[in-house]
Image 1 (spheres, rainbow, N blue to C red):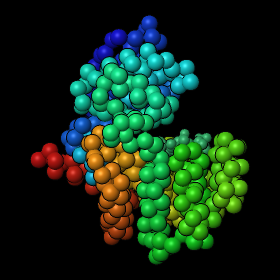
Image 2: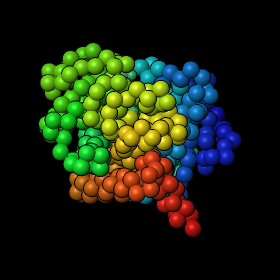
Image 3: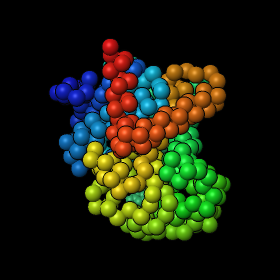
Length: 348
Ligand code: NAD
């Protein structure tokens, strides 16, 4: 296996992992360890090219620095990607990749992301201890999605309070894009709070299930981006908010769980200019990494610790939205500068 350094002036360390015999190519990116060891999941996807995979790991690892800091965790930002179809992955590939992670000696902790399962993490734990999201063990944290959804639910209520003057979701129309692990849990919480759901997914079975379970209206994959609602909760893919889609939105609030919802940094300002209140994704979806952190940090009273961190995360969002209103700035700009100040303070 070849492990080579990739030149970077934005990240602390970027490694390219290659083993021709195993048909394995991937990257590990450590964006920042200023607040603690870098933590972020391992993603496997059939990227179109190595450059596309590298761009993804650089972007995602930087995003983890912001997410972990906003969640008040003593963790930095990192991420790893493997090129390929996750359905075809082999144990040998995962074991080799785990050995590559181990060479960083704890500067990067991995966990499951797209294309990975808790069982894959168990296998990788044979080669490195710097892996979380295990299904069993003294501090195993299990599936983070319910905690992610709980954090997003809090963020939706807080953003609604800022926009509508009340966090009460009874009767509010909430459009949910993506009914996977996070979206399905979120729908259940929203339905329980009396919200009227409009749902969409590329998987027709998931749409049918949500329609029945939550008495939801349905929208097409494209239609969910323009549906009339109070709140739009993106819980599928990233980069869905751009100049065109923002111009067509028919909502007053965007608050959801998908990573990297803004296609570019300018799109936060575009939402603000349209009067749409945006809960920055790296704040709203921090519940999952809070749950994973209990494993990395070997927290004993996991439930209480997670509950406290979720309350603090919600208070952070509240402060960001308050400051955004006071300064007439986009919440994304305020959230980003808040985290940058934290990183600078740590460096001083
Ligand atoms: P998932 O793969 O379980 O679910 C994603 C769902 O989105 C699937 O049902 C898929 O069919 C659907 N989808 C894909 N493209 C779509 C489209 N164009 N329109 C509508 N639906 C579409 O993933 P997940 O774990 O639920 O994560 C959802 C999002 O939240 C991702 O962006 C992920 O990075 C982010 N996130 C997840 C967690 C977590 O704890 N799982 C934590 C933080 C952030």
